[in-house]
Length: 181
Image (cartoon, rainbow, N blue to C red; front, side, top):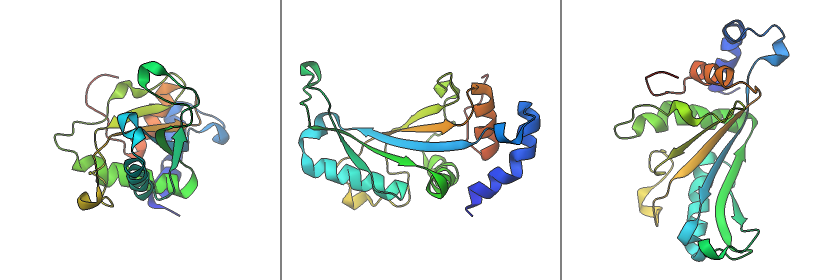
């Protein structure tokens, strides 16, 4: 069992009390984490897309999928079937291992890090935030990177309430920015 999964099991009683949940099955928990990268202009260069996919796969510990455009959009210079991004969905132990690595290793390595924004909740208990570059992760070798890129991380929880999701993530160690909610 991963360290973060064990931490979750340890905080369940306090989490239930703080969220006012009577039934154990209604205790908020992490369901999945989705890491996505938009290709943008780099979508035309297959070597660059492959390098980005390899980097995200290395960070996630699971193979990333190259997502192709479903429609052609002239304003974005996107062609149907052309690569438009990269995505990986983590569940189970991979999800807990990535979350542990993100909270305890990667985010503290960000220069001038003041915490993740509190405004990233979507009203349905899910949390989104972006990272400017991938170099904060220890697996990434600077020499093998063709171009630095950011990524969006979506943390999906089992609750529909943003306050419960915030409490869950805070108890798991997510470093939120100081200030009011």
